[in-house]
Length: 102
Figure 1: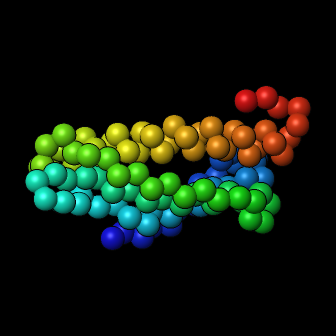
Figure 2: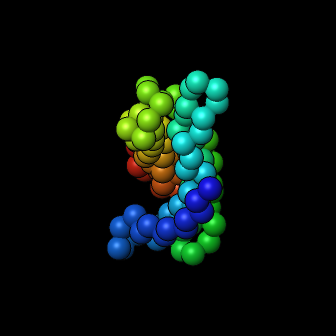
């Protein structure tokens, strides 16, 4: 289990920053199958004050039970997560600024 915290500034002039916690990043075996298990928490702050958070848990089957299969599954799982995070961030920022549309 890996736990990593990373702060990301959305823009140098933006009041927002994103904190990312990688809670789980595992290649898990169950019987004859294996899975990439990814759990990540995103926390959004505005002017150093907490605004909102979202936790993702994705269990993606590996196409083959090997390190290469795990990499393929991790890439797919992270693709799902980051695609949705983009939409979530736009929703949060646009909600804060009513004149913006996502």
